[in-house]
Length: 194
Image 1: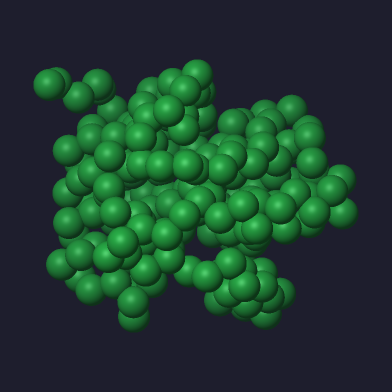
Image 2: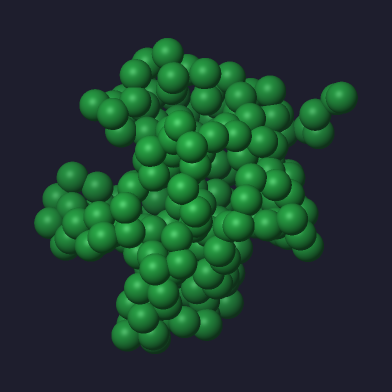
């Protein structure tokens, strides 16, 4: 599904995203090991072919679950193939997003311990809705790791997304200064007052 006015990464770029050399600059174990425990339910929104999904599945183990969301069926098919090859298919749960509404997440309220939005929010037309949906799916005190590519996403756009996250009810647990540029770790707090 392409979104008018929003660039969506073509499915074939997914092959570049799973290049093993990427680990030199973005090692999933080093980035997320401090936040993931065995048995957790995780969300990888905009998972593509699973560069982060598969390492997250290894970290959460056979008693955990990684819910992988993407708008491109070809990305999810490749993710499933890669998960089977690594015997992680029982942990990986692919979900095709068919629109920008809450029906994509039915039955998932307060079910996840950690969510990942890695280099994807700038491609989503309904950013405010996305952060609300992620908030809804996370358990109280759960974490959200949000990152955007600094060369691709300008500071004002990144800051607007941070504001949407705050409006949804997230608070900053670790800032860019503690992580890296255009990366923030949020925590789910009390419910949003409407």
